[in-house]
Each structure stands twice: as C-alpha cells, then as structure tokens.
Image 1: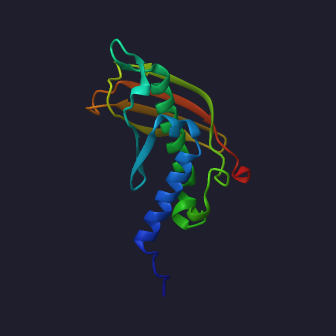
Image 2: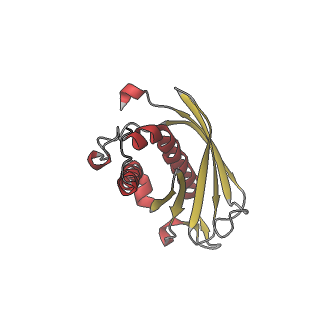
Length: 169
C-alpha cells in the first residue's frame, strides 16, 4: 500500500513560502519592489512601476541599472528555485522556518551581461529566466524582460553563476 500523497494545498503553501523567503533574501529586490508570480515551477518576476525607477525623466525611461538589477535578480531567483526544487517538493525544506538568515546560500554572480533592446517605459515590467546549464559548481542563465508584449523584450541578459555547495546552506 503506497503512502497517501500530501495535500496539494500544503505543497502550494511550501512552494510559496520558499519563493517568498528566496525573494526576501535579496534586500535590493525589496527596495526595487520586485515580486514573483509562480505557476507550478515557472516563475515570472514583476517590477511594479514606481517614479523612483526612472533614470531619464526627459524620456521618461527606466534607469539602466534598475533594468540590469531586475534581470539579475530574476536570474538568481530562478536558478535558486531550480536548484532547490527537489528539496521543496520532497518536504526536506521546512518553508515555515525559512528566513533570510536560514535560507540556503544563493548563487554568486560571476558575470552578467545586459542587452538594452529598447527604452524601458514608465510602467510595470516582467521577466522570465531560463537555466541553460546548471552543474555542481557553475550555471548559465538567460533572462528576457518585457513590458506590454512578451514578444517585444526591452532588455535581455545572460549570466554565469557560481553555485553554492550543498553543504554551504
């Protein structure tokens, strides 16, 4: 006789709590107002528009540094999410006990390159990251950011990351 599966609501709560802890583990993302929408294992980063994000008030346009930080945060969270997915699903992570202090270590950026494809307009922005390669020590991630139309990204980025050792966190 097989064990009864865990109630889906408990799994969803564990996923949401883990994602919240990951996002709160990057204080600058909180300052920028970045949040995440989760559908299964797919994450979408959302940069809610705020006047403080404008770099050139004459256009007006999102600041290039804000755009780069938004894409990099999206990449780090997606990479961490992918890295921790098995532990989240199995219940080895106690999501209720996760805080920024008890969170497993996040990947460290080796390099991050941003292509600014068009002006970031004064409105909400969205981003999704795709992990191209993830090994024991190294990972490569591609991110696309868009505003009104996902088919017309305003910026994209590629990053390489040093993965934390399993015993580190």
